[in-house]
Length: 640
Image (cartoon, rainbow, N blue to C red; front, side, top):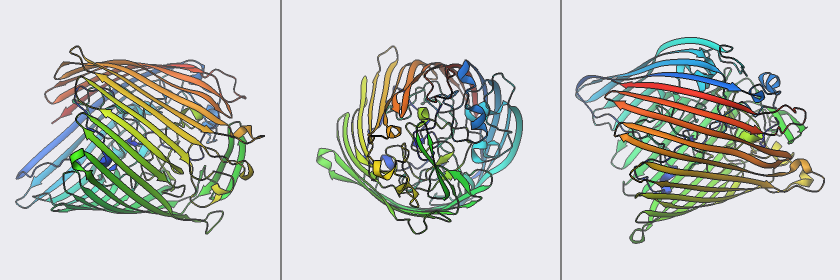
């Protein structure tokens, strides 16, 4: 099928994460109300100080067996995509997660042990890991728990012989690898007010409009699924089964210090990069948290990239090219020597405590440059603004947020992971950045070059829960073959237009989630409908953008006991409309699974069946894209 409706490339999961592709469905426990502080990264809990030696070990063993069938399992675009051409297939990929579906069997065994010795005034810790993966490399990399760094191709490591493959039978892309290494070390005062960490690490604090860790490109094993932009309050069974990782770790040194309500974190770390590339950030974050809804924070980040120039789909680098494809004008250029600085201020506060009204204000500014670029000296700062307020009355929360993210805000292009992540109109949604690039910030609410507002109404707790959302966003500046060559100008979703035919696009998002918790179990309905529209000037039909992406999942789950959870459900992810060419296809999903916890052991069994059907969007490839996929995932965990 044809090229994506985007001008830049995104890693799927965004968002939100950050854990964009760790979707959720109903849980019987009440959900937290949405608050203006949702942009802040939560601080992970720390182990209490204990004198002497202690050790904690987590082990997980994962088995994946996946099959595919149908003409879409080997799309006509596959050879060109493997060779690195920008046109990519729509299939065989799972629309809900963006992960490739490849026939094969994979097994992964991993263990991580944290060894700590507590002295009278301080603690010293060391984390070591060992892992072994065998069988289908794609299934091991995409459908198991996030692999330990030395085995993880998403972090740029080559221990597993990963390659893009459109296999028709198991065994065609198999491989094996085993690694053992020291993952990190730490030293902390006994009261926990000062801590030094080195190695692979996750950040403790920060605001996601300044920095968001790179989201996983793999899919965490689970028994239920939901749209990426789900409003649900938790994954079914998440009370006894949580993912080991929701973002890729950084590699470097981190220092934390606390005094009263103030906490400071200083970080110097390498970001995930492709082989031959490098990216590093230096960052400081200061938070004043009064613990009753008042929080002030300031953060500054500086990042640089190195290595060989790489081809990307922004045209402000060297040798810009604009090629007309069936879905519009595709820009490319060679980019290198990037430098990015982002500074942000954030305040969460009470507006009218007696009425339950709180507010949030966020301000960010970024400075970007790259060398060489096609038009030196055209870079300019970009700004980010967010004002929000919410009112909590009993079980209900009403919130209103206004956003503006300028086209020059945080535009650094960061290639990493595996270039398998598909790049086509079907999968451009809901992220602004596709394929194996990501943005330093969270772009799950709105993307770069967008402004608008979001309204939410949540009813939480009780036998019936409901979440509603409406988001309306508009382009700030038109994206043309002229503006897109200015250093640091980035836009998501759209492809450039000719200057005399420029128009402004609009994006709307409708979200609905409802959960009913009778005695017989928990029922949830999760619906997200994204629409994208950009008018086109007479004579420029290639600029037409008018389509919607309806996504829905219905789930039933039940706690058979406090330690056993069962879930089953159906889902549908579709795209219909036009992006220059007609779009009309959908994936149907059926899933069922069970989780069992027994002492130090937990076991997950998950079954999923997908069926993709529709029309090809590439006239030169009349072959049917239809295919089916079946996956069985079994995982056992031990916490010792």
